[in-house]
Every structure is written in C-alpha cells, then in structure tokens.
Image 1 (cartoon, rainbow, N blue to C red):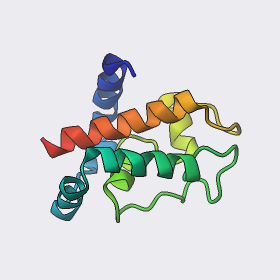
Image 2 (tube, one colour; image 1 turned 30 degrees about the horizontal axis):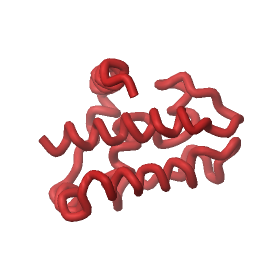
Image 3 (spheres, rainbow, N blue to C red; image 1 turned 90 degrees about the horizontal axis):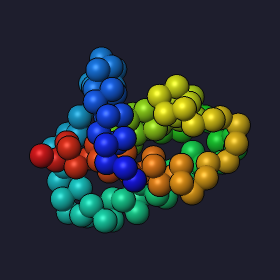
Image 4 (cartoon, helix red, strand yellow; image 1 turned 60 degrees about the horizontal axis):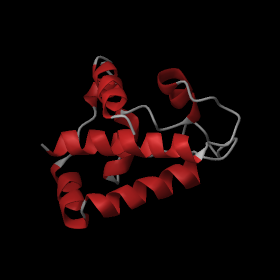
Length: 119
C-alpha cells in the first residue's frame, strides 16, 4: 500500500474532532505489545473480512464495538468501522462486496494508526 496515501488519509482524519478523539488505553497498548503487530494484523483482517466485506453487512453502522480490542478503536479512528464511513471517508462503494485490494487498504490504514498510537 502506498505509504503517502495512508499518511495523507490519517492527516485528514486527524482534523476531524470525532475521529481524533480516539486513542488506545493502556490495556489496549499492553494487549497489542503482548500479541505483537503481526497477530493484531491477523485480527484486523479477520474483523474486516467478517464484519465489513459482505455486500450488506449485518447491523451495518453498529457492527464495530467502541472498545474491547485495539482494532475496534482503530476502526473508529480511521473511519473503517462501517460501510457508511468507508464510503464517506475512503470513497469505497457501499452495497458491493469489498475486493481483496480494498480489504488490504483498510487493514493498512488500521495498522498505520495503531503504529502511530504506540509511539
């Protein structure tokens, strides 16, 4: 994934009062350290493929909890939490199955945000 695109998108999201209000708590940081970035990336792929990738995800707009896993927090911070946010912020069309490329992009921006939060 193009790092410049990810960097620019994170900068744009950071200008949003709502999106920039999300941060990892100490227990989330500890969980991430204990599991490691590779395992968390696997979790992100799982959540994206099972909660967002379908043409019309179950409970769209409400499928991503606001706490409980670092990826969930990152999804809200990066506007990758539901299909409406994906469309508004990332211009990823709704009402169609996400491509592998789109899923990779989503996971890349989630991971970039998590890395930034851990610094």
